[in-house]
Every structure is written in C-alpha cells, then in structure tokens.
Length: 61
Image 1 (cartoon, rainbow, N blue to C red):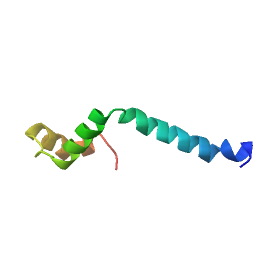
Image 2 (image 1 turned 180 degrees about the vertical axis):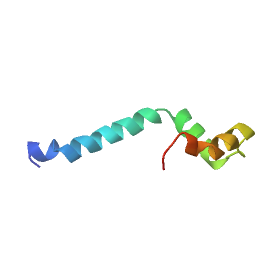
Image 3 (image 1 turned 120 degrees about the vertical axis):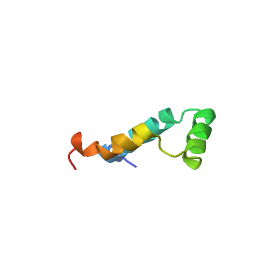
C-alpha cells in the first residue's frame, strides 16, 4: 500500500474514530459498566418523561 493510501482522508478518519472509541470505553470497567447499563435499563422518572413531552419546545425536528 502506498503512503497516499495509508494516509488517505478515509483512512485517517477511520483511525480517528477507532481512537475515539477506545478513549470512551478505555478500561474493562468502563466497558462492563456501559453494557450492564444498556442491558438493565430502568423506567424513566417523571422529570425525564416531562422533558420528553416538552422536547419540541427546544428542538426543531
């Protein structure tokens, strides 16, 4: 592979995305906590339900 192909914009962007992902879930503890949270979702509380109902006041869809 040429130097150009190794440093093409898509290759650089891909490497940046992978690095960003690795920073977000940097440790095994982070990964475990993230996936446990996703797998064990709780019901939304009243404040979250109210915010969802009023979301159109703040965002344009």
